[in-house]
Image 1 (cartoon, rainbow, N blue to C red):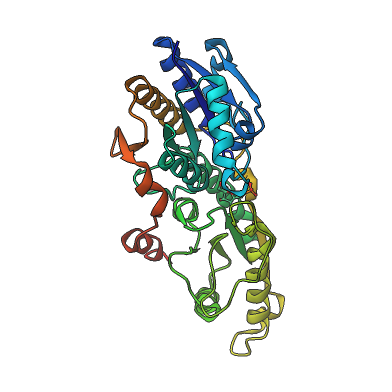
Image 2: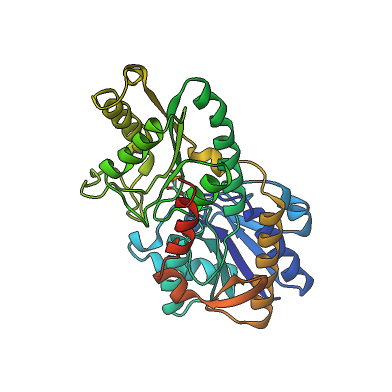
Length: 352
Ligand code: F6P
């Protein structure tokens, strides 16, 4: 009997369970057994997991998170890490692995592929920043959650005539911030692809104040950096990613905006009462049930990954191109980042 393994690594993401269900259903249909490793690459290194049945995956596409668990374990940080993966695969007689993850998890899969192991990648990230796919599952759910929260901020911001800085996830790119910000009418969208100085941001807030606008909402991506100001060194995970939440970027911006307006003597006396507040949406954006779009995208990608296993087409990543599920080059997908382009950014700035 043919056998494969599956794992979900990196930050969890709505739609992961739909992928697992798709892979398992498609493989079992062709009598291929699927072993689910727990907690991403950690489960492979520590021999933790179980064989999955159709009953295990019944209806799980409705659930957020991942039934297999996840971790940010980096195989390459272990002495003999790749050999440990090879050994685990041999022990279980797995012909290949389906790795569902973002650039870190798929980066490991790509290195193992180059070392001769059979790998198939499924792109996952709420950040939507993986190249070679138009959209990643999880992004739609996360942007809808962020949009709903920003929608809510309008009334409280207006009642108190405040400036709100709301921080969305997006380590390297501003996809969620832009999508949610434009949809929920944030007055300004700050994303890593288009850095601004504090003075530039302040002059936009000031302009609104002078125009007599009662409040301002700024959506900022956690990875945004002020031009000319260096990000302090912070704790990093096993892949070297800075733990951005510790930066308190939204609070930093809100405090500076409040101080700047209050001390701006060219403004009217209302400025003495000016207040700014910050909101960090954080992991709320990753939690809970996926949208219909993400359930369907995850399902289609999982089924396609199953097709690749059946045909022995290892070394590839599944991807969404337009409305079609296709096959992309794993190597390219993990070496290039998909960024928000100028045309899309201009859509946001048009409404400032
Ligand atoms: O998976 C992507 C992501 O959600 C980023 O947007 C965010 O910076 C990061 O994960 C947070 O990671 P963790 O859950 O490890 O704090």
